[in-house]
Amino acid sequence: MLKLIKKIIKTGGATLEYPAKPLDLSADFRGKPEYNPQQCIACGACANACPSNALTMTTADDGNSLRWSLFLGRCIFCARCEEVCPTAAIKLSQQFELAVWRKEDLFETADFAVCHCQQCGQPYAPQKEIDFALALLQENQGLSAQEMENHRRQYETCPACKQQQHLTPASRINIGRHLTSGSRL
Image (cartoon, rainbow, N blue to C red; front, side, top):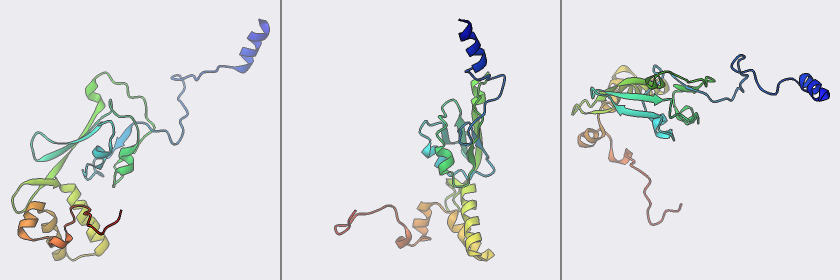
């Protein structure tokens, strides 16, 4: 019995001293998603990719904005949101202690203005997404101010009005992959 006690003392503790000492986490540890609303363009890719429906994009109560929301109580830390975000607005942190007193503290939200069609006035897309697309176009092609204004007019017109006003040629509209009798998969 004395030998067993000596061996236990010599070996030391088998458990971690958490929470008295912080845990050493791997660099690949996936914790709470950190969200940067200034970097987000409200495209909704994260909400579409979220398997647990922790992320949602809904129309806000005022009808003139989109509401992005994250409910950490449903998040499974799968990192799909981080993978699909085109602007890297979501990054998984190493924070995993998410205990709160109130359920409302597990929600994160951000509101984004909606672009209204220049022709019919109907809301149809997040303004930040359109501005991001125009900024990419300007950066890659170096267009003049007049050309950018023409593109802005086209981008800020809803698809129904584009079709009525013939702003987009029918040959450039690709709704999906169509199979013909001679095509192969």
